[in-house]
Length: 225
Image (tube, rainbow, N blue to C red; front, side, top):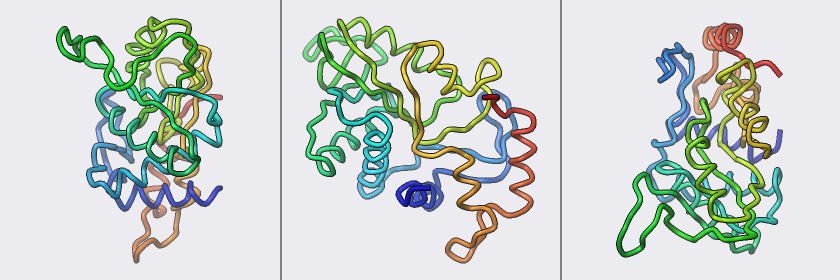
């Protein structure tokens, strides 16, 4: 596993973004882990987060694209932080764009904020985590309505590796449905590999009990390849 991926896993835990215990998800599933990107709240955290996303986008999709699109609302700071990181790390200026939940009819009017998307643009979509694909369902038509636009891929921070609407993971379902590649900075398999039975700051984050709960969860809800 690349160093930046290991660092990112530690960063999620240290930022209290990735937690382990007993959680009830929006889907009603009882999960032994929970991720909340809303817990990235400081300038330092957002700068680091943008760098991890930038490296993962570079590794998975390259830099031959024009716009980084972050669906509202959590995608807005992600797109801003990551375009800044791409500029700093790779010297490439990428425009950022997000959607509004409601169309604005005055001033900076329209459904989009940030850079417009125009004919011929290549777009990468950035999100925190995808469990149902609902935000892509809402934003895909918005992006495609801007003209002859190519979507190069979707990047999320964590692949939960659980079933979406069918038997495949939400990321695989999106790839199959919309025809563009999907990727994550890390997967839950990476997280378990990096943290299981290893002491971090004087504490074992994933011990035998939590590992057993994760295994049981995937036995029930794990995605099929």
